[in-house]
Each structure stands twice: as C-alpha cells, then as structure tokens.
Image (cartoon, rainbow, N blue to C red):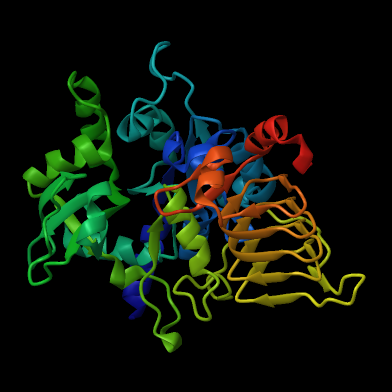
Length: 431
C-alpha cells in the first residue's frame, strides 16, 4: 500500500462515525432475551455479542461509535459503561455513546425501525461533522476491518455500499438477498424472499447483505428525511431504504472476502454469523471449540475487547475419591471450578461450578451456573445463575426436556431459572 493510499485510509477512518443498531427485541432467542437486549447476550465464554462490532471498530481505527438502544437495555448499558469507557473523548474526540430511544422527534413514537432510529438522531450526527456514516448490527459475530470497506466504498464512487457474503441458498430466506453485476453494482435487492436467487454459476449459493452499510453523510440524511415523510414506509433500511436506492443504481456491493480478518497461515474461511436464534447461537459457540476455529478469538493482532473482572484462574481438580477432571475441546473461563467430571466440546463462562461425577457434552453454561453431582447434560444452553439438581439428565429424553424446558427445532435444550423454578413446583423431590 502506498503512502498516498495510507493517508487516504487514515482520513476516511478519522471522518467516520459508526452507528450500531442494538435496539431489537431478539424474540427468536427465546428466554435468553427475557431480561436483556440481544446484543448483550453472553457469547464465547467471556464476551457479549456486541463486543464484536465494537472491537471491529476499535481495531479498524474508528473511535467514534454510537449505540442505539431500545428494549431491555439495562444489561447492555451496564456492559458499555463498565467495559467501554476507556476512550479519550475530552482530548481526542473518541467515544462510545449510547443513543437510547427517547422520543426526540415527537412524544408518540419510539424507534419505529432501523432507519427511523438513525433519523431520530440526525441532530447528533450533524454535530459530529463527519464525511461517512458506518451502520452496523449489534447482534452478529465476525471479525472485519471496516477501514478496508471504507476504501472500497470510496473507490466505487457510489453514495452507499453494502457488505455482502455468500451463504447456502437454503439458509438465505432470513436475510436481504442481492444480485450484483460484474462491476460490483447491486442490481436487485429482496428482503427475506421465500425463494432466494442463486449466485450465477453457483446454484446452491445466495449473496446476502450482512447488514453493514457505508453512506455518504448528506446522501443518507436526505434519504432519511424522505423516508420519514413517506406514510407507507416501515422506516427500515432492509425493507425500504436499500431497495429504493438499488433501483436507482446507487449501491455498491462490498465483498466481505476483502475485509474479513483471518489467520491466513491456518487458511481460515471468512466467518460471519447471525446469532439470532437459539440454534444459530449454540452452533456459533460450538464453532469456538474446534481445534482451529474460523473465528479466532486468540489472535493478538485483532483482540476482542470486553468488560473484564479480576477473577482467579479456572481450576480443575480431583474429587474426594480421586477421580480426575477430564476436559477436551472446550472453552473455560476464569473463576470456574470443575471437580472430578468430564467436559467435552463445551463453552463455560466465569464462576461456573461443576460438582463431581458429571458429564457435560456440547453445552454452553452462562456465568455463575452450578451443576450439582452426577448430572449428565448434552446439547444444551444453561442460563445465568441456574443450579441444576443432582443426578439430573438434560438432553437425553426429548419428551422430558420439552415438558420442563424449551427445545429448539435443532434439538438444543434451553434451561433458565424460571423453568427450574417451575420444575421445583412439580418435582420437589429432585431438589
């Protein structure tokens, strides 16, 4: 890269504000979002989902970030305040600023959609006096250098760019699907079609939007004002804004292959996951237990930042009978203690306790979970502060699992404190 292009990249970064949309209900994650917004859900043994978008910004050199919140945002706000308050706003103009829905436009409506969320903060955006607005989703897991997308956007001479990735066609109905010409111009955009279009020459693949947009600021402001005045609009980027400007030939497709951050020595594939369902969330956590996962959270050149606490190291000990603890292919966070049990292909967060004679396989245990003696658990997610009664089995009897817990279409058992409290009412003998 030449000195001139380096300077252009630095200028683009310095003149960019990132907006992270973090106000969705997250209902497809079921009880995991009963008390928290989806971006605040725990992930990967240590992080929250939103940490990936924020870390990508920080590592890309973007130090001005706004987070738009709405539903059940207390946990998210606490995480941002305690974990992301280290940027220097007073002297360097760096910040992570929370932009909650607060009826700035009128006294009737909160955020009506993703586009309306940005529109309601136009006065704040104009005060930043930047050239580019980077719009991100707060509920995706991936590593991306946004500065490379910015440079690609500038070269395209388009007022808007969308990051895109190919996914299996059978999974594409949940996303905005795109068709792109040989020059990278988006020719068609369909939000969540029943029959997704195939990539030319690849009948089993569909090109989808990653929900990552770069806009020229004045172009975006004008679009949002027009959309606000349109009575029939749902005020959403994917449903309204993007299809409208695609028809005018104003959208450039940015190939995620260009800006994906990966360890090329291990030939990693580009990794991006929408963890919006119980099944996709569980699979993304299980991805981390592989020997060389495509999402490398151990790469010191692209760290995933998060809120940290002073915790003791994880501890693995023999039980009183001398039974050894055996762990394999697992991510186990600080503060956890495992006594004479087996843990395989699992993700354990901080302060988890596993008593003797337990067997855990392909499970995700949120912080402060206690698994009492003799439990066998497989293919499950156990919510924060749950205590599993001794000798209990989860993931072995589908009928029992569905009676007491939630079982996803993919067979993942979700267990929460409320579910265990209901179980105690009908089966006090277990406790």
